[in-house]
Length: 173
Ligand code: NI
Image (cartoon, rainbow, N blue to C red; front, side, top):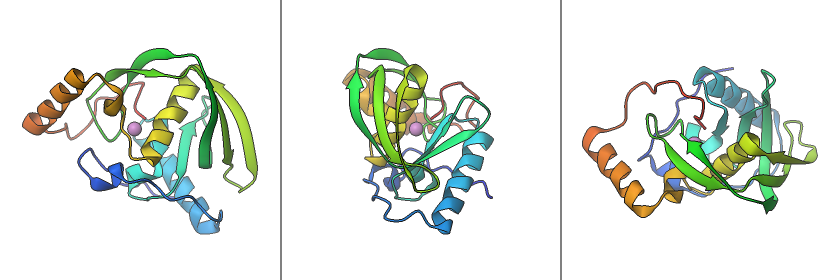
């Protein structure tokens, strides 16, 4: 296993649409293991493959039980409710904003072993999944902020750059 370099805002791969995975091969499982290691090393609770330079539809999430759940080709097939809460992103260290997300989602994906899975998630887990699936479509959480707030953040990044080491925070995705 290896810790991968997390790409930062400004890297074009973060704006690409990631390609579906066609087969869960040993190489792909190795990538998922590296993503899990990278997520924990970065003290994140979710990570999408484009964030480590891999343009494939793969995400990993903290399962809240000191483990990680890998999802291949995740799709949100149903959503309900809405909830506003603060988010951050490992690719935008030091930047946080209130994002409105669905409160409940139903997800279909392949697990790390390639078998189809379907599950429901709510609250924080639902938020993490929506944030990570956005990454697979080239969308960042700042895209969901009001334009005035987003412009202020973009100007701040242009002027000051992003901090080298992100302060640890509970919502780095
Ligand atoms: Ni993120």
